[in-house]
Length: 226
Picture 1 (cartoon, rainbow, N blue to C red):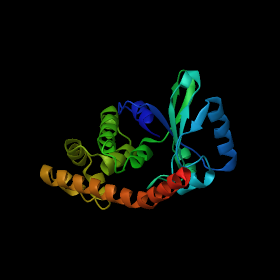
Picture 2: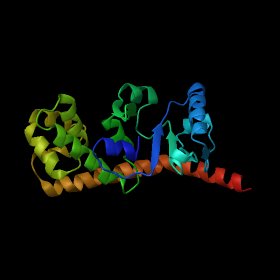
Picture 3: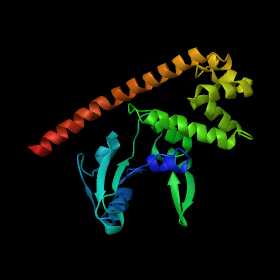
Picture 4: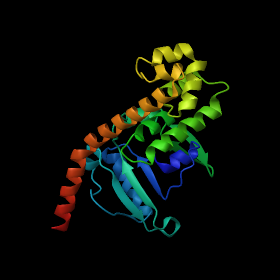
């Protein structure tokens, strides 16, 4: 669900760690615990590896010591702001094959949604993921892909292009994303302003979501030190 997924979707991000979305239930976490033991992975910071913290939406961080995964960091989450619960994510997953083994990725729309954070690096990545998907599929897109582009594209020139190519779909989608109106009218300055405002609103929402969770982490750190 992180940088390595972005690589596989064509976003070309270098990543030193592996981010995993997992089903948070006791049986599955025991399975995960055994896999982490095989990797000689230890929890490196708060919170500890407990179900209740995953259910709260916190990430749990590990560092691997196995010689074949030396110093690899693994971050595990089961709940993210604005993203569906795990069973829905699993139903929509994308499966790719690496070295003869299946790898399950968040679907591209779910990955994009998970990237709508306060972090500066996530917003250019969203744009790159959408651009890669558009250029790979623009000659013969499905209705679902057109809807995805209208909902999420952040590159003004491409958003204008899609709005012009798919006028009826754009008209319908503008009820949920008003900035499609200046896109359809090819008003570049208005569109750029609207995209910036859309990003600011998501950053504010993410800050509000993480406020109490950061306080909880700070309390856990104080307890750990004492």
